[in-house]
Length: 382
Length: 219
Image 1 (tube, one colour):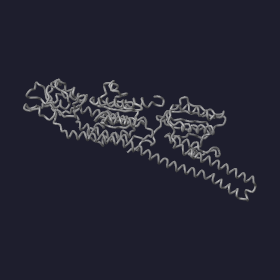
Image 2 (cartoon, rainbow over the protein chains, first blue to last red):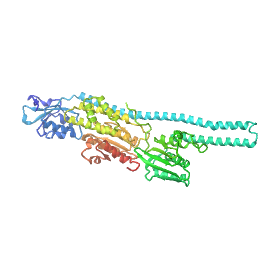
Image 3 (cartoon, one colour):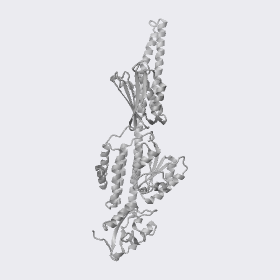
């Protein structure tokens, strides 16, 4: 045990600039210099020190303090009542030499209000800084996301402009050539020949209009936002199959456990309408099977649209996603898969294809269960 | 105690910011999710700091420093993992009942909710009741979280809840209370007018998600 700290007999605790309490062995307060009463606005005589301490932390400390017969100190204690709480004070237990039987003195080290106030201010500033810093983190993430989005749309715009200008040039060139032929008296002498060229020009302009419409639809697909609703994907897909009314030689099988998700319903429908109608168009004639299944991937659902059609050669698998790409020129605009990719990616999903010639194709669509973030992934470490 | 927790605690005891940050950075690099870092490294370390104070092995000043380091450390972690979402719902307004130093639990709750797509506004300590009510009216959050560490702050929590309940709102928010002052008395939260309570940030997270953000399959 440490040497007891003793209180000289001559000390007048009435003038002590901090709390002074005489405490019995059981913790009962039998004398006070009036400071604690004044600060807490309650009477303390006859009460137990524990009753006046801040919750369990100080109380546990108090029991340690008494248990170890502690003269080691000082001890930090927080006095409080139901209404008031004092700042942390530093206390020591002193033996009263003059009157050892009357208990010991619990003496507060003279408080330094100015220092305490500064400490409180520092703590408050720390907290405010931290709160502000957190708000800043969120704001910065928002800006980063907006920037990434702007960069993405710039890139998409470039690609789009390139695709449109490149692919629209072909029919324009053809129209020009037919027009030259029509104007050349040496070639388009016969009326039926000229009419044939004009009909070709009319077809090409019709085709161009389709391409322009497709380009517009493609452009809109990434930008427009539909209302988010909760829907049963199985139900939506059943309705789609009914709507597509596949030919008799096509069996479309939907897995029984397709999930309910919260999402934009219209783009979801567009994606699967295109995938299913592709599977129908590019089918194994006479015996076509298409299945749609779903697997839980945490925040995403992975849908797989699998068919037993002719498959896609590896060399084509990159190209199929490009706007105006089609393996059967003249049939459709080549919008389908480009639109699928744009719809899926603008909703923060992914779409990939697995296929080999003669072995059918599997389109894997990861679609978020709930609307999610714009910015991608974690920040780079370090 | 996990080695990372022990390392974090010793960094806090030494007042060594860099070492503390490094422990959390390393843990994050191994792929540990934020909730795990908060609940298995930060929270037990801060509890241990509190216990050391009880044992007179630390002063309040050292405890303050540990809190300040931890607040900054949490901001750093949050910055590394937070990803902006355009759709941030539901919304939660969070405030401490009074001048609370021990508000890290509420911060953790806000951060973890943000990670799950909530929009949280963390008001910090000592928000006057009128300002809180004003913000509730202005922002119409679906939930309000109030924390209190010590019993003397409970009357303020009660008054804040009454003021929110009395405010002319189109829809009353779900009020969740928490903090040490509520531990050990399971009916206290209900008695002072709150809808929900939980013993820690994860408990509150689950309760709030269950109440305001049922999963698409009703989970």
